[in-house]
Structures are given as structure tokens and as C-alpha cells.
Image (cartoon, rainbow, N blue to C red; front, top):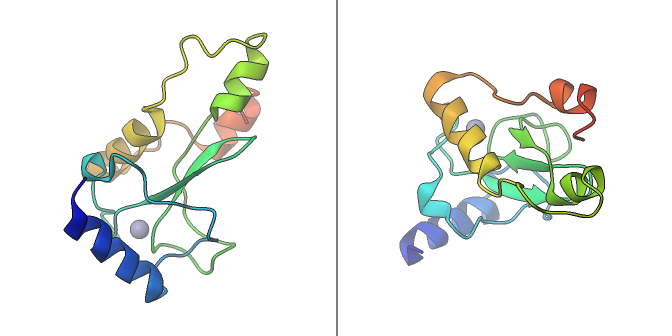
Length: 118
Ligand SMILES: [Zn+2]
């Protein structure tokens, strides 16, 4: 993990550049995450019961902001009778980097809800 990269992100958080609540944290593999093509920030991430989401500087406020999403491990486990088998823990990273490169969302919030993955 790059110490300079982490320091720069922490400064951006302190400067209020991130539009999210404090539950969003710097991912452990932050160097793999591309910079947002719109605001230029690396994303923070939060995994909770219903899903996993990113936050960057895009959005109106800490409660109304842009996110790339995927299913959370908790949701996967409850859909699969308690098994975490086949859960892709890199999916949020893959969805994020794909969106940065192509502007396409692999899993929209809407599609996750419709498929019972949220
Ligand atoms: Zn952004």
C-alpha cells in the first residue's frame, strides 16, 4: 500500500472533497482502483448488509452521491443458504474500474434490487 497515496486521500477527506458518510473507508488494495474520470479521486468503499458501494467526489452531499454498487457478502451468504462459496470479493473493484474506463455500470442499483441481490 502506498503511504503517499493514503496520505493524499486522507487529506482529500479532511478537505471535504468526498461526498459520503464516514462509514466509507479507503480500500486495502487502493492502488488497484482507478481514479474517477469525473472528479479525479480514488473511491472509498463501504460494505453493509444490503450491498457494497463506492463514494468519490461526485454528488450533491454525503447522503446524495454517485456510487458504483455490487452485492455484499452478507446478501450473497443469505441467498446461498449460509455459504460464501463463489462470492467474488473483487466485484466492486471490477465494476468500478470498468465504469471508469467505459462509463458503463455492470451492475446498476436498480438491477441489483430487481435480481434480489440488494
Ligand atoms: Zn467521482
